[in-house]
Image (tube, rainbow, N blue to C red; front, side, top):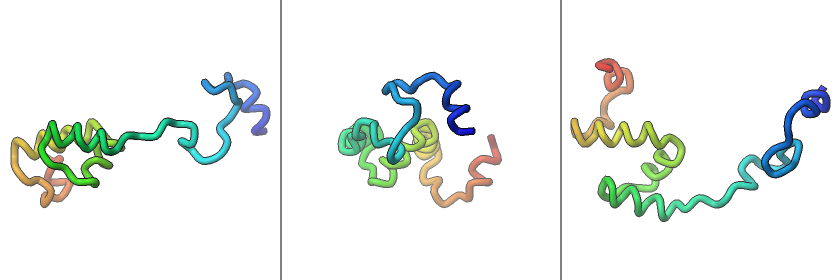
Amino acid sequence: MRSRVLATKPPLPNGKSCFEGRPGAEMDDFDFDGAHAELSKKYGEVDHKEVLSHVMYPAVYAEYKQAQQSYGDVSTLPTNRFLQPM
């Protein structure tokens, strides 16, 4: 069944019919130091957890930083209280 499904799909950008190996192995390395410098320039000093948050969820991280700038430290709020006014 797998062969029949893959036969109908167009080839991937790398010319292969499917990925082999671990996911992301063919992607370029991410510049975490550059992202840290960019975020520190934009928001002030940030830690490695914030850099990872930005990398995985850039729009959510930007929204969080905007709320933090508007309302102060919102990290102690439970999620349902933070989202309820929306």
